[in-house]
Image (cartoon, rainbow, N blue to C red):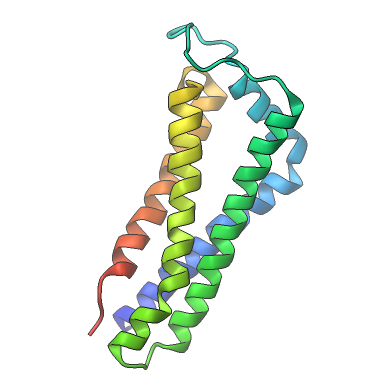
Length: 162
């Protein structure tokens, strides 16, 4: 199997990952909202009870954060899917055309990194200290796996092809 087809398959898998998590959040919207509300409330923080980040309980802010995450997952999935299609369509093209076909794939992977490293790793884990609770730690661990998947695929796909 050619490297181009493998890269295309990796991007398609990232697209499925992002779209699946966006979909899971939508079909479990009440639970997703409750998880965001719990993490952003700074509740049950025994190890680091003080935080410079104030607890947030305003429903508008909580819903805004959740919508931002789900929209980010969805957009990452759509860009990755479009990228996978473009890459597949250009699989037999000259190297410079195949490189150009990677644009949406790279955007999709980058958006996944923003969602899972930026939103979960930075805001959830560092700002709201979500690692201090069992459910927050589970979300953070999952987010790390998804971030790493997006990052590794980004690096692989970004490499030039002959």
